[in-house]
Length: 258
Image (cartoon, rainbow, N blue to C red; front, top):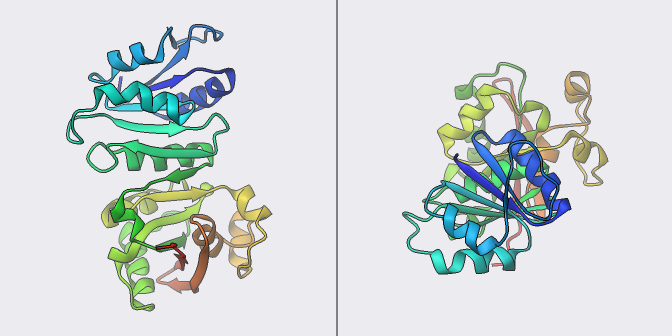
C-alpha cells in the first residue's frame, strides 16, 4: 500500500472512495461507525491508526478537519527526509492542502493530483512555489509532442521577458488528462500539471478570447486562456493565447499580496 486515505464522516467517505478509485495502490480507512465498503478497513481512534500507518506508508491522505489531522501526526514528526507526505482534504472536496513533507515527501505533487481528481484547488505554501507567479495555460491537438509543448511554453515566457523559473504550474482542460505529450512536458519542465474541468470553463464569468478552434475540437469557448486564469488566485492575463508550432499558450500572473 502506497497511500492510506483516512476519514471520519459519511461525507468524507464519499470523497475517500473517489480518491481510492483514482490513486493506485491506495486503501480507505474509515471510522468504525461508518458503513463498510469492500476493500476498506476500519479504525476506532485517529491517533492510533495514524501512529500505526505513519512509518509504513508513503502518503497519508486525510479527509477530515485540519485540526484533527494535525493533532494526530504531531507526536510522530521526525524529519522532512523520512516523514510521509501528508495531504488534507475537506469533506466538501474543495481544497487539497499540502500539510507535511511538501518537497521531499511529495505532498505538493500529491495535493495537485488530488485536486485534479476532485476538481478542487490545491493549497501549496512552500516558499519556492509562492515566489513563482506565472501560470501557462496550454491547448494542443491530440498527439502533440512533448518537445513542441515545452518549446512553445518557453517561447511564450520569453515573449514576456520571463523563463521557466518564473513558472508555477502548467494548466489545461480535463479533456487533456490523458495527453501523454502534455504530461511529459510537465515532467520535463518539473512543474505541476493542473486540469480545469470543462464545466468550470463553460460556466466562467471571467473574460477570455473566444476560440473557434476550441469550439470545433472540444466544444469549449477556449482552453489556454481560461485554464491559465482559473488555475490560480487573483490572476491576470499577461500573454493572450499565442499559437507556437501548433501549440496554443496563454500566460497569467497571480497577484500575490507579498
